Length: 465
Image (tube, rainbow, N blue to C red; front, top):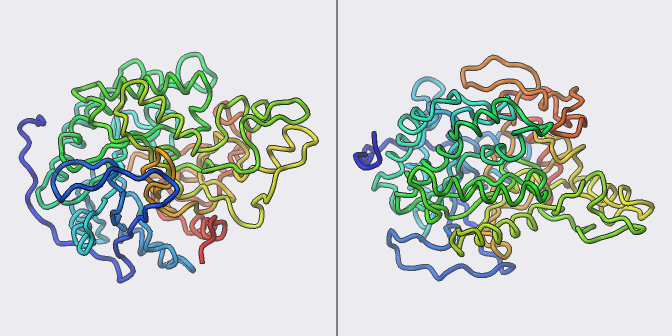
């Protein structure tokens, strides 16, 4: 089915509401950042920042899980992303133990939008062929060469629903294929972090083609805002990653009929733990003549945190040819690093490692650790326009949903077992042979993980009241 012969989806489904706690969460426009473009009267024309002044969808299924945990009702009204992590997720489970499909969520979003002048629905597009070529826990259902299935069975099916006129008044934010394009920079070639599958995906071009097709197809829908995944500073912040990654993003934005105008912006730190802002040291600091960049933690990276990385990447992308009004999103769902171990000042200046390690909020063993991290906490609550160039802080990863199982668990979702989710694992080249730092007894990725949710609540920063 081509994009030109697609018939708009018009069938309405009954909304599924999960409890009285669910309501539309409004993202307050902060005075810290620059104001977005003045909102036009309600038309199909895109706005500069879809989050500005808008309410945002609260997933009733996630909200019910959160409210069911001790203390969880305090955050159960926060907006989170809806993940389409396999083709079956589009329709949902319509039998016993029903789970909401995409149209169910959109119908519920229309209800939540009542009383709001503008309203955002966030959906994660996450099903590339050969998905997550460097991480087995979130490998997908499609083989490396199944690009045509990705296009027709997945992207076209999603576009068919999103283009329903019933949803035309929603601002639909799509997060495009996390952990895909960045892998083609850091996990290929002769690097010690390379994997055979990432090299295959680089050679066959199906990540670039798939992202391009998603951008072109979803970008044809007037009320869709595409944000492309851009890894995080601990992934792409080095000079030999930063520039090439930006060029690869530009290549994908010009593939399969896409153009940079199909891109509303980029998102960093999706489903990750990198600190939003490290306050106790900066990249230009020196300790006894030794640059902070030379510390073991920073390891010659050009950035210390997500905010500085996202702002710099935005500048680089505009210079390459993306529209000057693109904005950045930062996922702050699990990067708060609060609790009793949060540093209150710089580390000792005895040496550069003591200075950085004693002052950093991020308490991981290594920046490459990504699975169910021990000690993590909820970060900044979702908010629009918090800083220059940043469209919003978002909770795209629903807090409390697992990154991957801590042991092999058979499943029908195409998700494997990655040793980085095993708390006993001593690491590999991707994390500098450090301990994984993962929590024990974790379920398959995307499944509810109560112990992680409780930890995130306890270590939230700002704290949960």
